[in-house]
Each structure stands twice: as C-alpha cells, then as structure tokens.
Image (cartoon, rainbow, N blue to C red; front, side, top):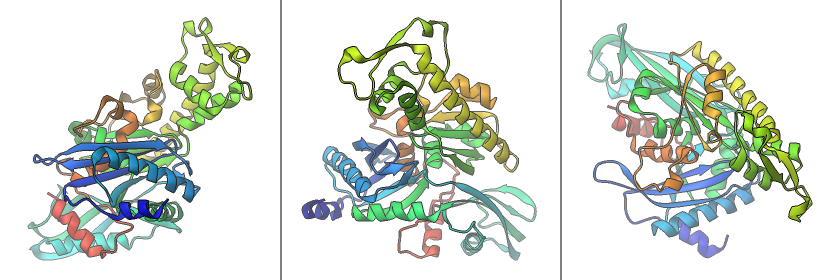
Length: 423
C-alpha cells in the first residue's frame, strides 16, 4: 500500500450521512457504502467486493494478505460511490460464538426507574464472568420487569421497588477479534461497531412477524455456519459451527481430483443437495489436476457429484440440529428457520434443512435496503446489508447495544448511545 493510498483512506467524506459496512468472509470481502434517506432508511451508492485472501474459517490468518484484499475492496466501493470513507461497521463470524444470559437486580425503593438504573444494570452485566480468554461483543437487554411485571421493553418512568433486567451477552475468543481490528487499523479504518454475522443477517432478512413471534436465522458462509435465535424482537442466542460452503468445494476437489476453482464451478453449475433419477444419465466434464487439455477431462455422471455434496450438507444440518436443541432448552423460539448466506443457494438445500431440522424453512434475502442491484441482493449479501441495518436500527422495539471494541469513548458514553436509540 502506497503512502498516497494511505493518505486518501484517512480523508473522510465531508457529508455526515454516509455509512460504510465491511463484510470480511472466508470466500469474499465486500463493502457497501450507503447514504441515509430523508425517510430514515439507507440507499446504497457504492459496492465493492474482492476474492477473500488471508481469511480462513472466518478468522484472519494472514494480516498482510487480508489487508491487501480489504484495501482493494474499499477502493472499488469508493470509486463507485465517489466518497472516501474512514469509519466502518464490520462483521465477525470467526472463532466460536458463545451466548451467556444474566439476571440483574436493581433496588428502586419505590421511585421511578431512570437512565442511571439502566446504566447500572448494563454495567453490572459487563462484570459478569466470561469464559477465560473471551471478549464481549454484544450486550443486549432482552427483557425488563418491575416488581414481577414482565415484558417491559423500556422501564424508564415506571415506579416500583425492584427492577430486574435480563441480559444476553455474546462473546468470542479475544485473539481473532483483536487481529481483525489490527488489520483494519492498518487500512486506516476506525471500527464503529463489531456485529456478529447472524445478528446482522437477521436484521436484513427477517420480517417483522418473524422478529416478534420468533425464528432462527442460519447464515451459511464460506468458512463457517453461524446462527442466531430471535424472539420478541430480540436476539436471544448466537452460536457457530466451523463448517461452510468451502468445505463442500474442497470435498469435490478431493473426491474428483479437480482444481479448487473448477470444483467451485461444478458446485455452482451442477450442484444439488438432493439426488434425482436423472442424475445417472446426465454427464459432466471434470478437469483434472495438472491437466490443461480439455480432452483429458473425466466424464462422470452428475450423480457422483451429488453423492459428494450431500453428506457434507447433511453433516452441517445435523450439527445445527444438535446445537439448536441445546439452545432451545434455555430460550423460547418457534419452529421457523430462515436460511441465508452464499452457501444456502444450492438447489434442494431448503428441503434437506426441513427434513433434518424438522422445522419450517425459507430462503432469506436482504429486503430493507434501497439501491441494490439484482446481483447484490441475494443471500450472499445478507450480512453486509444487515450491518447497514444495524447502524440505522430499523426494527421497531429492538434496543441496540453493541460493545464498541475499538472506540476510545468510555463505557457509560456507549450506554448513552444505546439509551438514545431505545424506544
């Protein structure tokens, strides 16, 4: 990266209504630059994306390679938008996401609940013990109650003796998070928020009734599959498994002895989660590793490809089923599942998910953003669309509090930001 390039990155837009989101995944890195509208929404004015480099399993494993890919992505988006950015909101899908729940008790002694009482409850939540080596990403109030009256979303102004706050905390191992922030700092970017991928994807894809009545959002990425449970317009649980679409691609490459790029192409063109009677009759050409001439390609039935893809996807959904059963023992959620992410686009995957998870399943696309082309409005762009949705908090009744991992402001300043956005 040249000095001129670095200096350009440091010059922010002169307009205060510019938002920028960065999705750093194992298969692609994407940036959306958006402008807020008079109606309070956002319109995307610039998109950039680049093949991911230096990222594996959602974690940065080569900082220099990741930095170069991030800068190339930003350059593309800035050129289209005609704006320079210096502040971003970014996703996190690596490591192992962990959900923790805490009940916090505050004595009111017959007076009104105030901002200060909520600050105290959240500050006490921050003092809850987390697993060793983990770092807090989100601290979300999911419910308040006063003197046994439950279901209170905003307790301020209510009178009672005892205020109880139920808090949902999402954490992950600190090292991948700090490496992510270090890489972005090298790109001269200030990180305003870090948001776990399934939370962002849920904000982009879930309709209001799903948010209210409960649904599970499963984000099938390249290196990981993450999921979040939503109920009563809150994220109540988040988790991840280290399996994604790239594992399917690698299985194809190994099983058919073809280069990885050709394996990805075969998956995209001919892949299916379920087999059919015509698969034995349909023949496909499979280029071989080290062979450049087309005549040296293998000619195999499509059924061979399907038999490689199916077991890996079944394994993925079986792991998800087990994790969901464990999670649903502690939180309430209904039987609706929304699949999104680039790896959910294989034909037949919805039917397979319904069979293994024993739930109603639909494919989710981002629908809250304006200005998206058809190429940028599919499931693969759910996370980055949700990052922009997070900045504007469009979901009525959802308090927003994200632990700002990179800002220099104090904890209570961040609490004030949450209070200003709460209903």
